[in-house]
Amino acid sequence: MNPYNEIQKTFEIKNGVKIYDFAKCVETLENLGKHQFGKKFKIHEKDVPVIKKLLIYAIRDESTARAMNIDVNKGIILSGPVGCGKTSMMWLINFFSPQSHNYKIIPCRDIAFEFATKGYEALSPFTKKEEKQSKMNNICFDDLGTEKQIKYFGNECNVMAEIILTRYDSFITNKTMTHVTTNLSASELETCYGDRVRSRMRQMFNLIPFDKNSPDKR
Image (cartoon, rainbow, N blue to C red; front, side, top):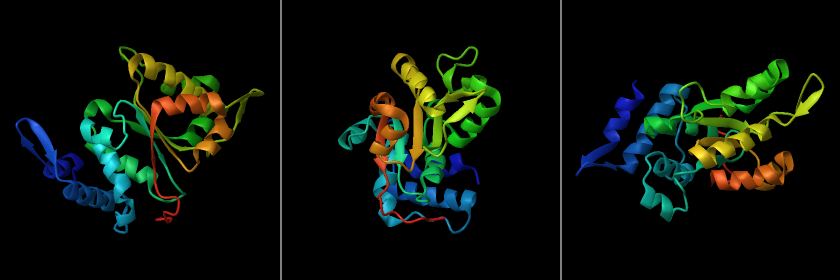
């Protein structure tokens, strides 16, 4: 199954503008999910409002996004309980994004483990531009808050706090796009990363939460 071919079926072009059929979008997401994650994958009715916000953001429907208090020029924090489908949904929604807004999904714990062995060099892919790039790569940091404070040669570092602060500077100057999934609440994020990081996150991200009672779908 080619995801991009499937997505072509979710819209019509009228007067040069893509007009999406939301029901077809949800159906396509579910079909892609079953193909990627297994036949048990299902879009739950309770999650449809969250999915609609993510779709509106991904297709960059600015007027509808504004009505939903979503700024398409910011990234996304997708929050919710363990197992509610945050990572899989960010993976699926990515196919609806324009190529210039596609992102890689990187587990925060992997970054922390890399830092433990390689030190600050391990942070370079997330805090520096590649040669000939005008800005850093778009990244979705998965499971923010599951990584731990890591020591490298005795020096302790809050790895994700450093990355977020650096990417904030690039967001301001170059519109670098960053996304996050997390199980943590806003207050828990502040406890983990401090009020300075939390303040930057408010400026960088739209918060889109799953219902706190959303069941574990694994």
